[in-house]
Image: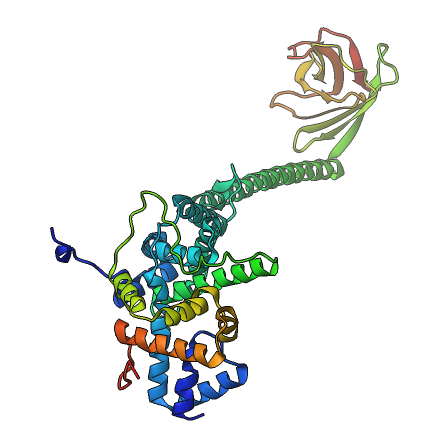
Length: 201
Length: 254
């Protein structure tokens, strides 16, 4: 089998399936539907938390927090404002950054340089391949190194552009421009350009 | 804020780094500008996809188990309170059975009370009948005593019981005696007082006196055809009665 023969499927559910899962959870308190969502998105949530927190144990706690919150607040999931994965990812990111800031308040220090490096993958863990991952990795690979750093500092550390500028020793305007450029480029590669709006300006 | 200014700050807005005042201005603009609104939404979508690029392992199985345990715990706590051993109390079948038992008990109690009152009514009715009969008898006796053709024969105590006495109300036309005796000693076991018609020939058996422990005796007898009594006597005889006097004479008409 050649590499091109391998069929890569999307990670996210189809909209109709997503709505049906939510309906069953909401109306029937269907645990099977909940577990189906968990099995689909727990790796995404876990690795986002690991990336932000650099701590497997804390990431494990974030996963449980996020999915428990999802089970308890499923009525508040508004699919008109995005899909289920974005709801879970937003919650996981917020929870993780809250924990990170709490840790910083306790005067813990970041390990300089670990942000850019990929976390060491546990031995024997096979990376999961899905369509969105390939697209986003490709989009991020097309960013310049300064653009990628700026956007990742913002996303994974929850840093403001003032903090990023201070961290990198760059002027505020430069960081502002890099972030804007990174988003435009990502939009273009990921096909999320708004109608009538050029993806690259 | 115009479209040019909007595009410049959109990036900072997405990462949550925009000052509060600028956020308000941008949101005002986006609300009225479909183009900027669409671009802003596209930025948000692209930014939200960032974590999809991450590689890494699945969370440990313990996380899934812990969540399942919490789900089970929640499901149990949502159930109605169960009291071990008394759960049957909350089942409809038990409620129906209890209702049926209650109805049966009420019916049984009602039936028992009904029987008790019925019995009391029957007893009262019988008592009334007895009293009526006694009244009728007493009235008949009184009428007999008050009848103009009734004469009175006094009975005197004999040697065995001098203080005993009595009266015979003798209705000649109806040939009836009403006999009252007083201060007779209680008859010994197997004995009773017997009344005699004393005629010119031999005493004729008249009947037994009913007596009470106080020594009072009574009899109402009819004088048979062919018997012409001239006097009366009372003797102590075997309680079934005898055809001729054999025992002690207690009373004799004076």
